[in-house]
Image: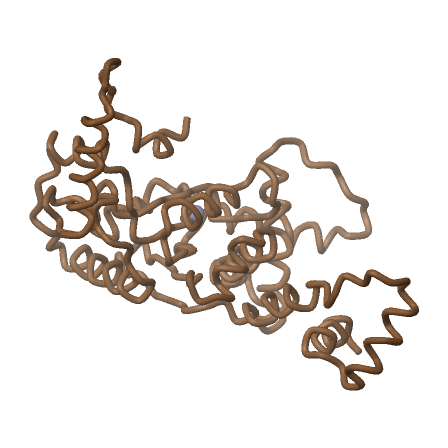
Length: 314
Ligand SMILES: [Zn+2]
């Protein structure tokens, strides 16, 4: 169950609550928001939203404390839980990580409940839109207003190693025919196949499975960032408007250090495709007549038409 969604209504309301009570509570919340302090020592909706660069700085500082073995001295007690339940969550970032038990996201960034919105699966992957974590990302950026989405891969990722091994093995046996995936896990690993093959293509011939898998971890982070943008129109729009930043990172499970990778190299292309797909106008006249009229008004291709042509390879 998505308990995070019910945070605003978590406290039981008295059945005979009056309008005056409600107004008083709303005034109190409004004042708390204006004061915007960590009065409860946790982030809640009484605090302001955090810009992406500040969220990124918070994660970097937290990871540094984790690497140094000096986590922040904090107390998360019943009053902190009550504050989160009463005022609602207001995380600074959305993080898409691997389910690997060696990658506890809150701990490696030295944050506490309410600080980050975490989504995890094996291989921090997003190979399809429906039933994946795309909807959850849209919830976090749309309703919780996180302005940073961080895709976090990690070294020695078993899912990536498995997918790489499977993909390279299939490539070698390409002539022997395809065998259908035997399980959902097989489907997940097969979905990561293109990542592994891209990683192999970017390395010199003769690279070992381990070398390809190590490179595939980075390729996969960028791949997931690209897929999130490709599958989610609301996310693309927010990134285009500068309201949300999508970044990648890799967690080293030996040193504990997170390497931040920045934006996806193909992000501009993905966003440009969105622009290219937007309709120029909705013609009210017949199509031929409308095109003729537009050509009279605008003999040069518009930017979106140029983008469409560019996207089509013209
Ligand atoms: Zn993993």
